[in-house]
Length: 363
Ligand code: NHO
Image (cartoon, rainbow, N blue to C red; front, side, top):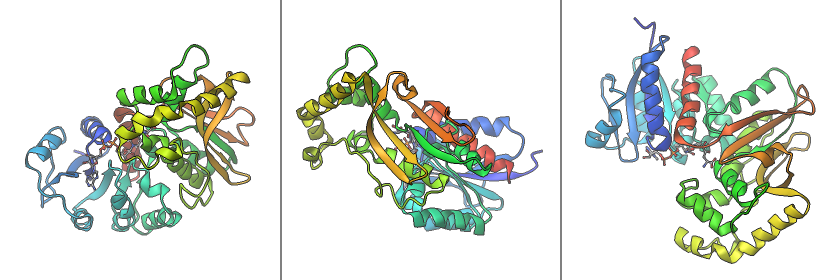
């Protein structure tokens, strides 16, 4: 006796996608506003769907796909299939695919709404950003990407609401990467002993806090992408995540290492440099953190290491937590600050599921 039926198509079922599927199964049972029917599930290895759009059982979808999925259709075939569905469709992109991100305007123009934690679409060229939001208008479709910054924490929705209610955002500052948070909280603690930089990176990798190749965290691009998204939402036409200064923590000499193993085995050669930076901070009673900031009056965006006083909220972070502060006219001297887990499958998937609820409430 649901008032309406909505088709859900899911691409990507890894760390975030598999958690999302569990949350979707829960949601399908526990909300009454629409009948949620999974009509498509794909990973890089194949896809599961019925030509007549019949429901796929959400709980068994992933093992079924793994056991008897068909070949992965092209993106344009996927768009044709979804555009032909009898009810409205929400595409959930849980991949980090640039090719899928580039196709968002096509999906949206065909009336398919999109929710995603994938940063690519919103942090590549400014043209793609504009094309996406124009396409959503043309296709009367919606696009939400809360988990592209700060996992499930309400960062994007908060920023949008500040802007849309007429507050003036003057500055955004924070620790936007769970990996960088962990590395610097360990390497430059407020008190107690810390290991060498290379040992800290090794430990973070062993604990699963870094990408499989830690260079993908240390180059700062993940943080630069998040800053690009935030800056654009605040009104700055940022061209790309490489159009502002980003401090790359991969030493120049190691940028050409062929493998991540070679990189890890040579990182200790550069421990002295990081130790020097840390001592510089310690001598003035401060700690070192890797932060991003956006200065709205000048349009300056930057990402890199900075020193913080022990009392500063950024210095008090624990584990792999993120912290993001919005300085605005209304909030005055004390910023609106959001802090909590910024990485991990379940909390990232929660942001995606919350976006789905927002889309459902407007369908
Ligand atoms: P996985 O585990 O690699 O899974 C990717 C899935 O996509 C796989 O099932 C793969 O088969 C499928 N896939 C890839 N390309 C495909 C294609 N062309 N067609 C079909 N299927 C394809 O990735 P995750 O970890 O589940 O991440 C998924 C997305 O969420 C990525 O865009 C990622 O950037 C984003 N995301 C993840 C996290 C996280 O914690 N894992 C976060 C945010 C967004 O808040 C998190 C964060 O920022 C962590 C960050 N490293 C930090 O702060 O330190």
